Length: 445
Image 1 (tube, rainbow, N blue to C red):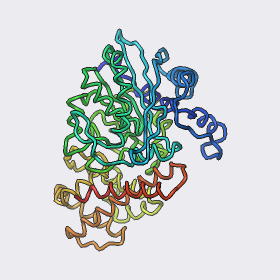
Image 2 (cartoon, rainbow, N blue to C red; image 1 turned 30 degrees about the vertical axis):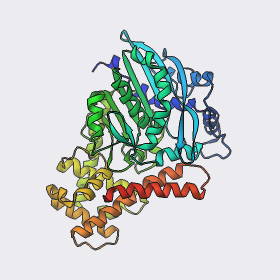
Image 3 (tube, one colour; image 1 turned 90 degrees about the vertical axis):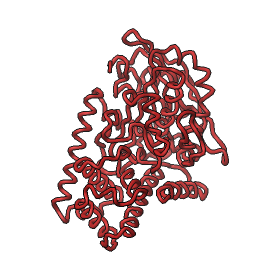
């Protein structure tokens, strides 16, 4: 794969970060926090509307903190910025700055970047409702049912994509980039462009899941875009790529996929700090994709060491559980990831502990026969941790895994909730509770 035809990790990460400046008021919010600290009160909130083109240009190609001037794309040309809508059809939708088009030339080829922003909790219920709307009653042409909230944002961008059809069709390469919600929407934009015949590449950072495993969304993405053209980066303790839970699935879902860049987190517990765009930039700074693949192998080695340490000590799990729910769930994730890597449980859809537990609940505990002795010990330790009987009956095992699954789903929602500095209205709490229950309920089919 030619480097000239592909964005570098650092270029893609800067794009995923600076696209947030299309949101009206985001620059003022960012500058306030830079001056007074992230926890300082009184920060101006972003609001509905599109930032001026001068503000967008400054932050995309000018002097902004995550500008492409800091990368090899310093000569990129901002073509236009655009709006999209978030929210729900029931409670209303809000239009706000959502992305931009950027052109550049490299290696004698014409390149087009389509960047889309992620969730901003400061926007309140419209962005958060988009994430919480996990129903699958929306169908992406050629890809089957997908996450309704993400599809509705994509649909709001369709008029913009249609108007830009000429610059899309005349580009030699189209790069679709996004972080968080933006990564999910970028998935659908990349499918759209590839279906129109464009040579498309997709880059996501900390993106949630978009499509469904039963309808093989991962296979559709491979056949339409090509796994070699999909670059999915996630910190191993970023909770957002873990949701929504099964049967949702990522493109390039397996830890063994070479373009699933499952890299080490700056915070070694499940934390929204691991979801921050600045931390993603730091994780990929100065590296090429092959270097990130090497980092991923090293991360796999560390996960195996967690598993080896746990296997060798009856007290190991107990020592590491109890610091906090996030730290405890992160430890369990690493133990199971080490088990997957060491024993080789061969399920292509497994990428995190959430996948493993979802498959266990849906398929029955028999999937663990390939590593029965290790699983028996793990189950016994976990059962004791939760104060449950250690009788390894199917009923007890199913109950245990559902409880683990619920804890992880709640942890991810708590992390999202914590980041959402919005008024905790009764309606908002009902929405989050319903989303959590819906996520867990999908497992019990």
